[in-house]
Length: 440
Image (cartoon, rainbow, N blue to C red; front, side, top):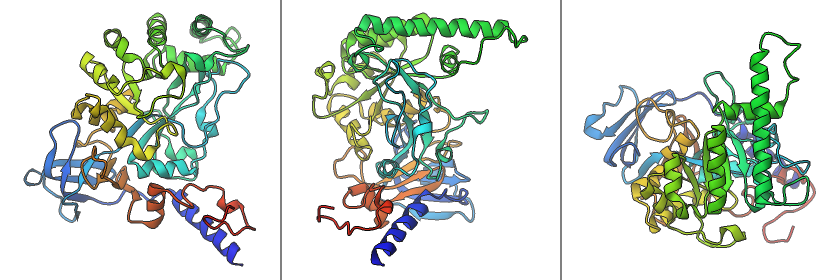
């Protein structure tokens, strides 16, 4: 009976966490904190006013009028910054393209995601509010990414960020280098990899042209092709390419393909970007950098440097930082940027790399990424400076709703780890003791 009761309690906890949060609350003001708005100077003893899920005012206490009737919350001694934007994440149980071929742009990663996965709880514990969830990098084209807000929800649709037409927003994942080089039907060399990609984009151009020429004649239009539809969105610059690439020569291959076919691209990982920073800058292409403090993993990443973000920043490249979770745990995202500062990046640049720069790479710069009037109220309350090893994420807010509170025992569990944190399968086990440390 005790086991059944325990299982029901766990089910209840999961259901409570997965139920969509209520409508945005009325106006409230956070007063007394140091505010890091990103788009301007840091504000000592500032005030942030939120109403209806949006920021209505931010500034020094004596320059902000708190609406009558608004709840005042004293956060003196704390730090407030925008919700963190992760441009490259793999939580949620991703399952994208398979072994049937190297190019599968028709795959939608959100068809494989479980919004009840414990990874989403870890992410908000780290202050993340917006993610670009990606397929893996074992294919030249592995499918469509999805941009999500960590609002909580029972179904993945609850997390979608939608465009003006109501469609879920996302990019297209591409990769080169050693990941996609294997036995046929996959390419065996870098040259063949590029040739296969070029071939697909030429087909997409032809498909698009035929569709346009025969827009008024259904009999002459080609049969609907989901793969081509995805690539046409890339060619029409509606869908950003998020491109896994490490070596300098592979980076240059991506830039050539982007010039040839005119697609927008963000370079991801870019281990050797420090070798070709000027070329990346001249191309006007942004970079989403992975910052790790231990080398290894793959041979093509052997020349990783702490200074990569700094070199790119100095060259004039827009730089974001990503987790690639599980490569870096989402709970340690702030630490990634701190390491970039240690490698020579400016403090301001590192703060932008966690927020505004990533938002712009996801075409969301007008909605999130900084604390300013009119933007969605995504923010994090920290115990101290974001780049201090002693700082903790105390609360995470998405669109004016609190989605993480370290003072709540279950939220704290997901922040610090331990028995039961992210143990998604517990509700399915009815007949075991399952105590920590008993080997079960």
